[in-house]
Length: 472
Image (cartoon, rainbow, N blue to C red; front, side, top):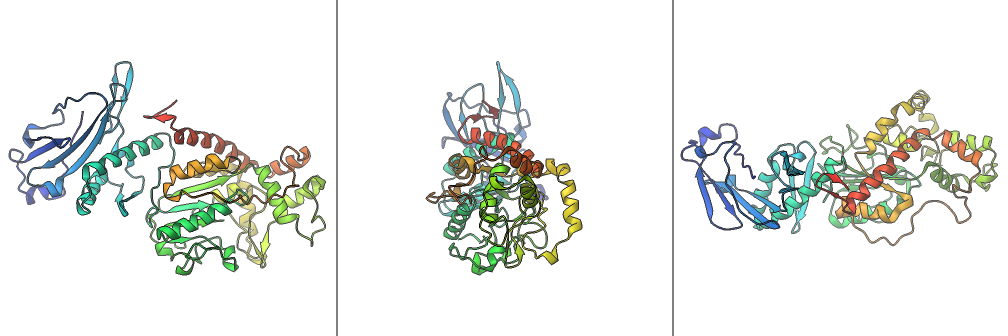
């Protein structure tokens, strides 16, 4: 069943002298003969039968006679069989078919889910998905204005809609084909999770695509340049010199926190929805070991500098986990060893980019006390992003390329995980030291455990084990 709904704008009936007995709805199937009928012959129960064998692709063009340019729309379906049905619809329809369930994907499932953009023959197609029919209307206007074959365009667009709707039914993020200022890309880089090379790839790709971006330590040409601006943890330093003004940002990546994009200090052109985001994670104990060997071990000014972590007493490690935070030029540059993933996901970073005199200890202590109470909110925020795992980089790359196809890169660099060859692994770490780290990362462990399940669901979707709303 294919349902066409004619939606008239305010005042259109009077302006067009609309007459149900004269207005005619025309349907063309696979570029064959056009069938037109009076609008008065149609209601919600009317049908026009199209007999095609299973496995047939059907391209449908519909328009109001005499108003082709204003009303024309296209629709593509693959008739696959009884169970599964057409798999695409502009209406929500679920009904029993034999022993199976016929579930039709819905263009309007996109409603309220943010802006949508594609690159088509070098042109950017954008639409606002806040209206139920906007996607079909804008697509018809776009292909006509750019002399693109509308039938072929809708064929590919329909396949994308199928894929996007399956991801939504699984509560997974949508695929972002190209970032825009109204639908940007954010990479929240949690320290010591193999994100440094990824930031370089993002900077280079953004520069090549001509996207406005801000990635601390990178110039507008996508070239790494280390200076004081590298220790920037918000968007204040965004400028044309390093990728784009805040008005023009489509891409942001760095050691920033949740909601960095929002408010007066955020991305000025952003509509306010949660952006398309990527977060890399690592087991909290592995991350702590890596951070120790990058930030603590090289410090000659500490009496436990140049000391391996397994040689520390639990009391000494407890001091490190509680108190130590990397610094540069008198500023803190990370949140240290304790629940830093939760702090990032909750927008509760209190040390980054600040000098000791700028710290608000009342806010810090209040946030630390509430951390476990907010773990569910941290998980909810994470679920809005694509999750990558440092310990499965090969699969993570496949996920990045699937959910962010514009970001596909040639991975030729060794990830900066901060661990030398002589550092302990988690399995080698003394059990009493591991307990110290875990005790100060209870929130992060909850998020980590959830993230692994989320990663597996993403993997099943990316590898094609998810079809028509069912997980095999």
